[in-house]
Image (cartoon, rainbow, N blue to C red; front, side, top):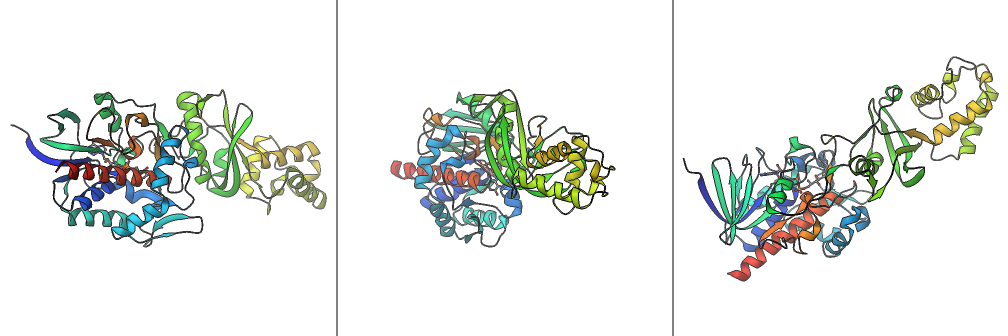
Length: 427
Ligand SMILES: Cc1cc2nc3c(=O)[nH]c(=O)nc-3n(C[C@H](O)[C@H](O)[C@H](O)COP(=O)(O)OP(=O)(O)OC[C@H]3O[C@@H](n4cnc5c(N)ncnc54)[C@H](O)[C@@H]3O)c2cc1C
């Protein structure tokens, strides 16, 4: 039996953050005058979008800079965000009906505090502008043909004059994107970098780590590579049985994962990485030592187990004592100055050695992807006319804080407008 052939002017492959925004921009600009379709492999649109920001969707950030993106993308991203600033992105959302608000850290969310509101408003616009939506339609090939493209799915073939590729990265495949962007890139001869997960917990093979399971504590965490501190983040450190987590750790995970994927950090080779956590960031090493020594002096017969009670989380004390081989049952007067100094140092410089790369099921974004030299400033392929590539499929990844969605939205707006504009010119 022949496949059904469905003819469109513009087809957007991927109904996620970038693809839906591109489709809305395109459709709004053309106002129902051409046939546009969004094709999504999952049973519904925007599965990942609903999971963003813990269900609240951190859409962008008032503190916007290309510094918050991967090194290789910075110049390109700088040009994009100079035109598509946070205000412009927020104005776009308001223009299609979504109210937004920023929290005290500058992170922008939908006013309703619901990621579902973001998806609802996109779908409302797609329906209003008569965009056809095909869910459960997994595109398996995109072939340039007759001045346009032929796209194949199970029992369906689409033809389109223009294609916007918005198939995402490869993390969290249960939410949709599963790396098909890179297959399309390979089929079309487009260059792609290695990809690896980013913004994820860092796994650690530390036999005492379970002692701190469930602890959340304020910390400054630093990335140490070959003995040098490369960068640091402040925030809540979450300690789990097999990994360390929290937004501050997510920010460092990109570098740790690059190290495990490529043996480099920001392109430079390293032999060893670890995470150093300062668990009393408001006190110096000397002050920490003095606090511990004071307790020993005041309560000589107290058990070592209680040395840090009331100072930091008790479970951290148990963990550090185990790591340093200090007997918790011994009385404080038995603790030597060396023991106290070692404990204080461990509080200030607690080392966690990663056991490998974070899993793709726990990460928020894919680092790496289709290289930016494959597209122009309109997100159009330099090799293929009328093929646009947007969102996480490209080699752009940002830090936590709304930077990845900002990129998805900005690239979607640019491609959607460009596809519509060039179509208008043609007519
Ligand atoms: C749990 C979680 C929380 C996050 N929170 C935030 C946050 O608060 N702020 C932030 O800035 N970023 C956040 N991110 C990252 C952000 O969601 C992504 O960077 C962004 O969604 C990327 O948009 P995209 O459209 O390029 O890809 P996606 O949103 O992944 O969309 C791609 C779509 O293409 C579809 N698709 C893939 N292949 C095919 C195919 N062959 N045929 C048809 N359809 C296909 C997929 O099913 C998917 O729906 C979060 C990510 C996760 C996983």
